[in-house]
Image (cartoon, rainbow, N blue to C red; front, side):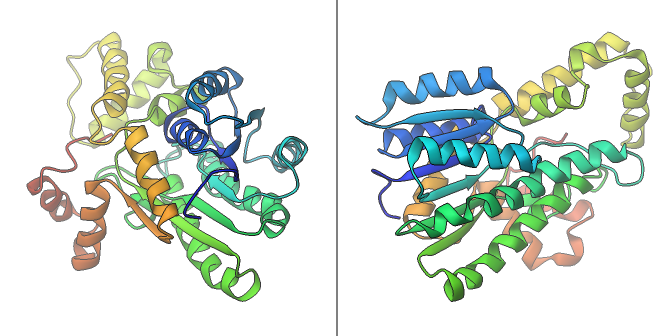
Length: 320
């Protein structure tokens, strides 16, 4: 898949972040693109941006679909086939959400929703689009995992179980597909993408999806947040409820705006890796450093020593 011109690509989570940038860059490279997202408005913005820079003759379609719902995934697949034909060359399973940090303390529904989107969406979309991939002359499945697919943490004091469990599943599934494809579908390839901190709106979007928009937190939610932050050693006794709302909003915006890598830069790294046939695509200096350090010091992975090693390299300056 050294060139994308004339190929048909599917991108899940195309409304914002890396998904939006994948759509834009694929269209600019001459690929016909079909995207899904839960937000029609966000996809409309993506489509307008992509069409402005698209190569001549490129077709871009958008379908509202929740990747954790198989009926919606199948409807999305049927819409893609109707708009672009029976063959699919590139499947980017990119959609994700963050939540359900604690298996012990957090709501089961939030935990399972996070897992169902981040892992279930990859599984369901790959299942649904497999016949179209098999019908193509060449195909590539590109699954977005995370550094949390080899480091199940945001630091030793922050539980991160649902997202990490899902991203480990994505990583293992993709690696298993490599041999599966070699044996049963040698014209297909699989790549796992492992981004570090990329400037996207995943924090803001996830908070809104779970009813925790910082600007609209209830008094009860603020009290829960105080308790959670106190467990991390933060004394917020002198902070007003409004101070906490403002601080959480600022933190989410900083995750997006002060990241070491933009979503556009991340998409370029991903597409360059696909062109080069890489099965493992690390995105960002922090991803490379974490990969190295977890391998070199596995017993330190979940205590402060690993974080100290990262910070000594000028990394991991942002903590949720």
